[in-house]
Length: 489
Image (tube, rainbow, N blue to C red; front, side, top):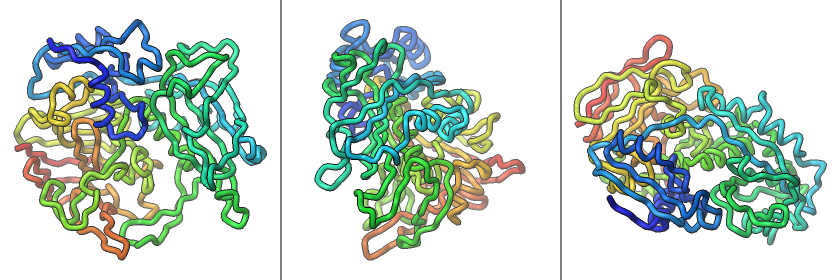
């Protein structure tokens, strides 16, 4: 048995997660935030022979204790070649919503509490439809607006939009408010000036006061900014409505900035709201990409490749990336949230040659993802860090993008995207990074290089071989499923 002060692990995990918020300490389902229980501990120990239990400072750690990582991690057992954890489905998330406005904004332009309730919680809303789709009908966002606050502050600071950390202490009067009724806060900051940066994490102790006292245990939050008005208040410029406008102007790879106009199923505000919600559900990472020009991702890096070898937000087809080309959600994060059960996933954990057939990831039945988990290759190379964060082995994730799903709308941009084959992603045991399965040279412009991820699927007749795995014999079947062969060396 090994006992480690919990604060040490919290600091390590915050760094590994790569999130900007000082309070992004949790990894998916980790128990590092004090929610791990004896049942989960025994389940992990039974499955892996290696498990970590968090012991908080008390029955329910305060927000300040959660920020500081007070408590201990207790480790039992020894790691085997594979770490794999139960993925219990997250089915509901009860949220205390707060609308925040500024004193100098034109309130007639901005969405009201009623408008936001319909948009974010309505059964027929675009947000509800998206969450229902990516969770295969298993997840529902619940809650209500508990406060509507207009701050005695202007919407701008030094000519730019005011940020979350510049709002000061939010003093909320909520009669009868019970923190334990909710899982998290959601602050919707509305402005007619511009957009601050949306964030998520754990509340700082001084961030929110409720009924004259500090928040005790409802620590998790996300804040999403919405803008309806002229940019920077300049009426000579364009009028923007990030809340309702679903028209997008997209610069596709190889166009050197030439924009294509298209319609998308979500507004910019809705995309950002969903992105931060998923962070709050403990996916404290982004949808990345890993490209190396015309070479394999693990070959010697091409000159001028910038940060494309492991690019944060680099999956431009994913709501946890930039969401420029589509609003999908990778099957790895769906799996970590428990929305893809074991019977709908194939796992390869030892060397050999395997035949795989996947249904499009929007399918409600059948196997929709396959994972290769490299034996003995743990998250950040350390089985203890991997187990304490409930992450799994390094490897690869395979999925088939649908052709009839409104959230995979890249064909409207004239992009091949992931159509006509299998999409391959790399995982470090936690994050998912989109690979270019048919590598091609970066586009070169006067301002620098741009990765070519316009066509990322491995198609029939092509092979992917990076020396670790070989993927070949791709066949697109009637009905949209894709068959292929995976060799793990």
